[in-house]
View 1 (cartoon, helix red, strand yellow):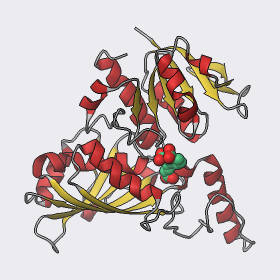
View 2 (cartoon, rainbow, N blue to C red; view 1 turned 60 degrees about the horizontal axis):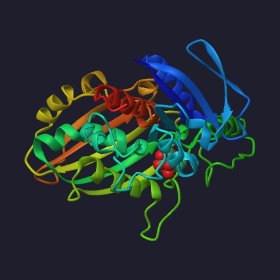
View 3 (cartoon, protein in one colour; view 1 turned 30 degrees about the vertical axis):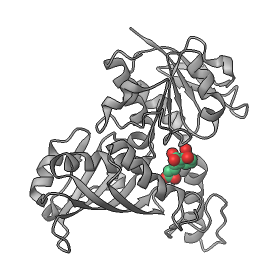
View 4 (cartoon, rainbow, N blue to C red; view 1 turned 135 degrees about the vertical axis):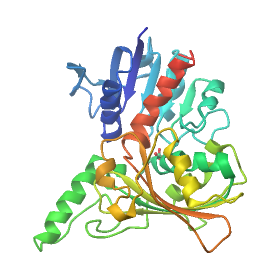
Amino acid sequence: KTYNVAVVGTGAVGQTMLKVLEERNFPVGKLKVLATSRSAGKTVTFRGEEYVIEETTPASFAGIDVALFAGGEASKIYGRAAVEAGAVVIDNSSNFRMDPEVPLVVPEVNPQDVRWHKGLIANPNCSTIQMVVALKPIYDAAGIKRIVVSTYQAVSGAGQEAIDELRQQSQQVLAGEEVTGKVFPWQIAFNCLPHIDVFLENGYSKEEMKMVNETKKIMGDDQIQVTATTVRVPVFNGHSEAVNVETREKLTAAAARELLRRAPGVVVVDDLAAKAYPLAIQADGRDEVFVGRIREDFTIANGLNMWVVADNLRKGAATNAVQIAELLVQEGLL
Ligand SMILES: O=C(O)C/C=C/c1cccc(C(=O)O)c1C(=O)O
């Protein structure tokens, strides 16, 4: 059986969605590639065939079984029309993530939640996805009271223009030229910016509050205390995170490492003698979440520290969305 698929958005995430659909051999029947008028008319290649990008309209979704929305405002404008046309919408934007009628799903963590979808399923924020994949086995074994996370986020999370800006600014700095830029609030080349998305009344950024709120919903546990500091770093692709977790029961580093070795979607890279720990440059292009530097936090009774890395365009966005579509097929929900 094949499924008619629409991909809405042709930026970094939308293009990665097409690549992942092809690589994972998702059973695509008809494909529609939709975007704003800005991209309509351009072409993309999928399974060796050229597709002309069409401008999205409410009528675009007739005959579509699953619509993958890459991000931005599109799902606010067309999400309901797509559902009414009979498509299941998997939305990578934050527009509906906290809507109680919308499941927020990471297949390795809460696959069961796809069963109560009412037409729209939300894909979590990239930084949240990789963290909950790493924390799920620990949560199941020992419970989680509190999470303190600091992120080191690649510029690709801010799109193709941000990738180009890092390259251009790096060259300008090395050439001793004036540094120019418009995507980030300050120079990103050779710098770290504790500023992702807008700042809120409580002094946190929206990116930080996404990690706080989305983690509770995905894990199905409002008692988990989360605090986050999200930082943009001069890395092209791949988000890294320093995660500190306080468990309810004692879990040694060795036990945590063993649990993670067996966890779905996780690769443990943790051999200090071999200087082996997760690296963004090694996670690039991969679909797994890489965990290392697993050690006890000796400042509290039940504490663990770890370093968590993943490709933010793939497992952080496109692959997670395609895995939700695969889950819908497996569950007979498409
Ligand atoms: O900047 C990053 O590394 C991740 C950014 C994610 C993002 C960017 C613009 C809008 C959104 C949004 O949908 O709110 C999101 C998201 O939360 O997925």
